[in-house]
Amino acid sequence: MDDDRWLSRAVELANRSPRSSTAFAVGAVIVGADGREIASGWSRDVDPLVHAEESALARADGDLREATLYSSLEPCSKRASRPDATCTSLILAAGIPRVVIAWYEPDIFVTCEGVALLTAAGVEVVEKPEFAVRARAANAHLLHGPRP
Ligand SMILES: [Zn+2]
Image 1 (cartoon, rainbow, N blue to C red):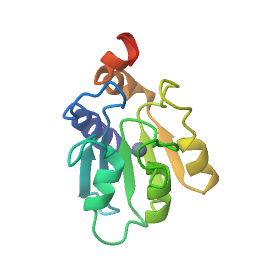
Image 2: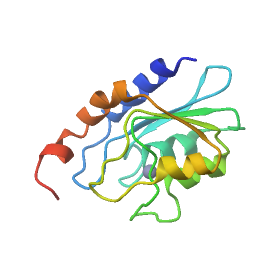
Image 3: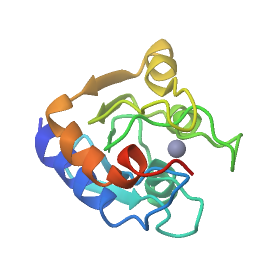
């Protein structure tokens, strides 16, 4: 399992996100059972509201029922901009069985229940906290700066 390699790539992609005072910078990569990248995305890469996981899923073709989704941040479970398209619900709808994250979402904007909901639905969630420092670095302006 190349979890470290792919999660590292997801964290790097987070740095491409245009910074926002009201949303996290996140990167996501979807990898197939054959170990090849299927799709990737980052926050606000195609429109000002799109989330990283959402963007990657929109680009992913084919059957994702053996894929793993890597995200620098816990997938969202509440979303002001698109309440019916949380990343958690999109991951479940795609049938992705495994999610690897670097960082649990802090309670800055909402209380996130993404990991709890995914786990309850039978998705294997792996946290690799050794990547959290890098995942947070792309969001330093949210963690230390003035609140929006
Ligand atoms: Zn999201």
